[in-house]
Image 1 (cartoon, rainbow, N blue to C red):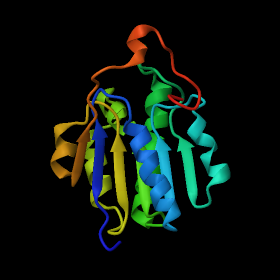
Image 2: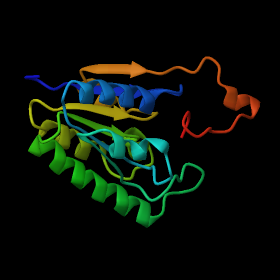
Image 3: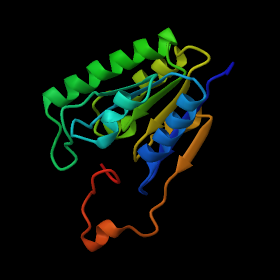
Length: 171
């Protein structure tokens, strides 16, 4: 790949992280290196184990825990900002062919850092690096600079019938 593009997977429907992981698998099978930084996710998601099985794949959780049901604490903000700094370095070095910034839109929505910081980071990425930004509520400023934007729309979800997250499917 000579030019890496910027993807956004957003919307209220299920499948944003799942789509990013699907592209990661495709890239890995093509011999590419993939980094995934998960913002706002400090819980035990099954995909964290993927790096044990897939050569060339690195995944890190850059948040303390999910705070969707509470106000973010100062420690959440510090963890997110530290994670953003790490991702800036990863993107600029160009060691990875695909970089996934999972739930970065949620981090922006909760004002853990500023959209201007994310835009500056993307402007300084190595040219060949493909980037995926996931999470609901993608800000217009990111949508404007992205090359591909996909909105996941919920039509029907079994969660509304009381089915909680299942290991290996939702987490």
